[in-house]
Image (cartoon, rainbow, N blue to C red; front, top):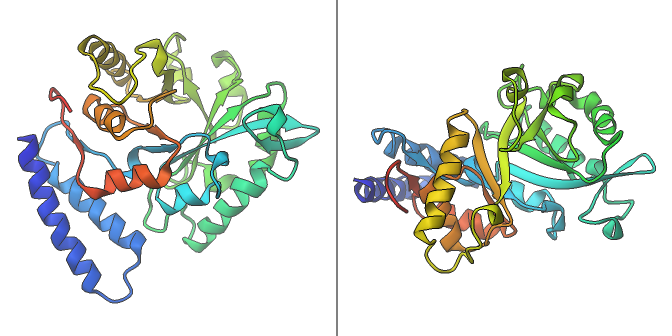
Length: 297
């Protein structure tokens, strides 16, 4: 059944692509959006099936290490972008380690300013066609770092208010997070990265955007050979546990290979980490990739 759906979707997609190419003034973003809609419709009659796309499932890991931070992931329509943040002398600097801190590389200059520019160009939305976007902000310093972020985003808060605007950009805090008992002390534009070992009340869980975990806690798989069955069962159990709470799953420390990407799709892992945004985008766009429950990848 799965293969028939994929073939049908691909046939429709080729026709749609040809029609778009023959048109006048159709932008690549509009074509990508149309293709995504066609793919989604192709899986509608398969219960529980989900089509994987850059906007729905791609996560740019340590995005600030790209040659063009923000822009490469954005141009490939990624739905999730990660930045590590240090508070240094009142400045919110983006870097992987303290040794790599450059005072000119700030949250504002690398991410907030270009994002706001795109939102204004897009008529108030991060992506003109209404695609989703979130920033995963990994706090490398605790203390007042989150308070400093509150102040930074305050002048443009409406762009991040998902309660009022469905297409607003979601802000997810990770790393040196406050304990769940203090989530309510922070602006509601901030969500938090869940941890499977933490018990959350219903109120606290509402502020959890998704759950992240190190893949090394479940397997030492190299991402080149097939995933061993014992490891597959462990990952499946973890994913199903998180999904039962109505939350999505992201693993870090993953092999950045096509074999891993396809395996994760087959297992229903929601966000696919990559250090190669263009490569993952090509992989997801080149053909319809569908997760179907109870089927292997």
